[in-house]
Length: 118
Length: 114
Image (cartoon, rainbow over all chains, first blue to last red; front, side, top):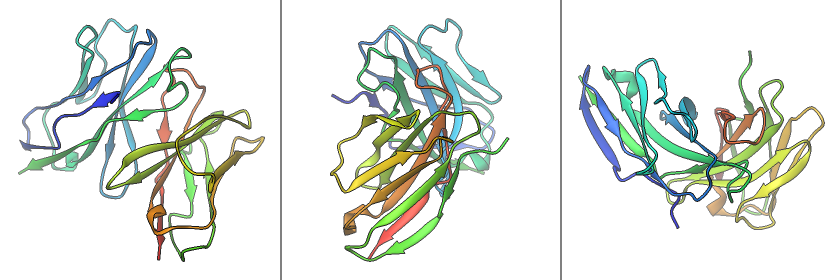
């Protein structure tokens, strides 16, 4: 069963506009962490934002925020005021707790390619 | 504070050869994991080490192996290389294994098998 699903293979956004990248996850574990990473063409995986399963507030990091809807098992990334440098591949990932099969490791979605137009 | 360092960054090998990739985690991080990324399969987990012990292993043949040293540095080895092993190999580290520990990645090692 797919644990992380990113349904948008590609997204386009105009510079300075906001964009939402979708992510749904599947786990029976109560304790888990959700992560978003940015991967430019150079290959480096850059950590953007983290949301814990017990966190009541949505995580925010600068222009990045995570829209966490636990009941729906979704963790969408919102990028505000898009910049040309935001063009990259974006991955949603999950790390489960000790009761999960992916304890200690990250399970990734297929990724979304974001293109920011000037 | 230095990030995760991977060497070499780029390498070309011939089928049948073996290769060793190195990873130095962020200082103080004890969990090190490896991932393979290919256009067709996406990001796949290879293995995870914690306190010099392999704690988790992905679905890869025995040609893929790794180890972790007492200073948390890690190496992975691929023997009898195949064309399909061409990929970006990413190393990642975190303080501990739990879901609340952020995982940071290195720049990756681009392996081409010809």
